[in-house]
Length: 113
Length: 111
Image 1: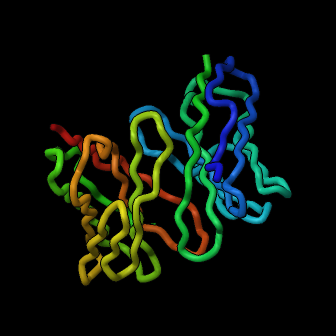
Image 2: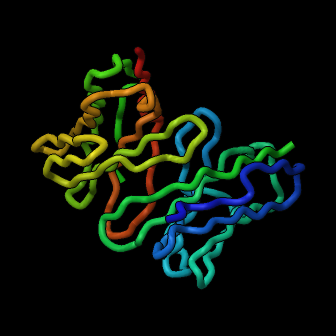
């Protein structure tokens, strides 16, 4: 079975630009969460979506937004990129029922120059 | 979610047991203890979780104290591939998937 897939794996953007990151969860998983991991730190929670609805939001500015599609895939959008947005962006999926574990993708490495 | 405290780094000899401690003294009754690890340049990997009772799976054992204020992750026979950052997280279950990662413990397994 395919795991959580994220695209692209790497990208470079210029300050002020917009970026869209994509995530496909494990088949059958209905919950998708996004995390930002700055070098040397643990991942920081950005969003959780379950059944296409936002169920949780971390302490991130409104420049960050996300959505989940009917097939449970998800997009993370970041507007007006700042140098500090450079990080590894991780997507995690879970069944969404009961005390289940999260399965993480390999992440998208975003560099803002 | 309860705050967790872990030592920043630990060493372990290959083939020996690695015992990684975690303090979660403010954990509430409905919060589980989860352990994840992150090998360099990869996404975090789920290891194990528990509520009250000790748990064991093919990867590790989780020992939770009776008062639930601390726990220990045990890798029974550490290998070089177990070198990673290990995160202890206390969080609600029920599909609530907001994981609060701290700095974790950097485990180095050496020959």
